[in-house]
Image (cartoon, rainbow, N blue to C red; front, side, top):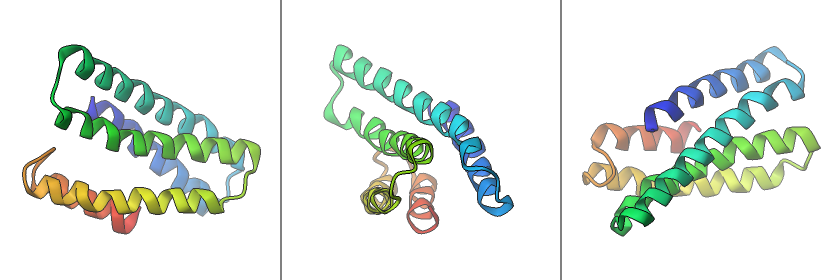
Length: 129
């Protein structure tokens, strides 16, 4: 599941980057942000549902919880763009996501939810995202 979502996260980040650098119209980024956010939302809900049905331990749900942070980020960008909302609340939400990447990275370094490579990726999201 992670590989599928990360493939689309990569293209949405490229699209959002070109949007910023090239001055492309706002509405053009909505489609890819909706698609990526929606895909992340659906796949994480499927994962959570499987965990509930299969009686998985609480640790099972952590990956989906962090995945939902990013799914909602892309959905938030799409909705903000469509409805021309004030971007300040998106900034606060992004701060919340960045703060949550700290324990996620630490847990990966402790081999919970990944390994040291994923820990580096989480810290990169924190400082660069």
